[in-house]
Length: 216
Image 1 (cartoon, rainbow, N blue to C red):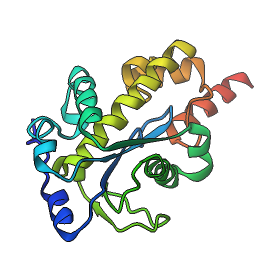
Image 2: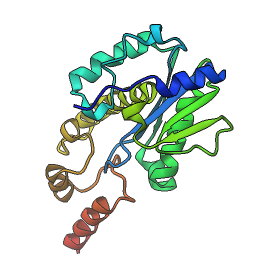
Image 3: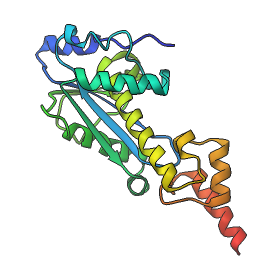
Image 4: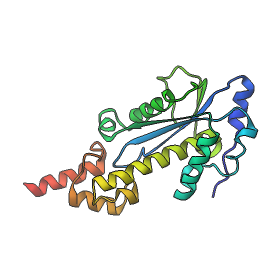
C-alpha cells in the first residue's frame, strides 16, 4: 500500500494566505457505463483539525470498499465543505469524457460553501473556472484534500452503480462498477447496451455493431 497523502501542498498555500483550498478528483472516467463523478473537499486550514485524516486517507484505489466507506464518514466530519458533481453517460457521449469530467468538477466546486480561493486538482486543469489552481499529476497520492476528494467521488459513484445494477440487471454493475471486464463485455454482447452505457466508447460501439449484424 502506498503512503498516506500529506498536507504539504495545502500548508504551502495556507502560508501564502489562501484559506479555502479545495482538492478535486474524479471517479469513473475510464468506465464503459454510468456517470463520471467528481468531488471537491475543503479541509480546515489547521493541521491539528486535519489530524484524524492524516495517516489513513490516501488514493481511493489503494483502499478497500469498507475502508473507503469508513473514511467517507470521517472526511465529512472533518471537512469544512464537500461538493459533488455528476455527469451522466448521455452527456459524456455529447461532450467527450474530458469535457464531461471538467463539467463534473465544475459542479463539485459550485456546490462548495464557502467558495474555494484555490484549487488542487488531480491531473486536469479547469480553464473555465476563474480560480487560482494547480493540476497535480498523481495528486491523489500526495495531497490530502485531493485524496479525500478521490474517496468521496469513488464511494458516491460506487453507490450509484449498485443502484443501477438493480435497475438494469444482467450487466453486473454492482461488481465491476461499469468498468471494462470480461464479464461486462460478455453481458454487452449478450444483452446489448443499456441507456447507461457510453455509446461513444469503442467497446460499446463494437457490441452494438455486432448485434446489428446479427439482426440483419
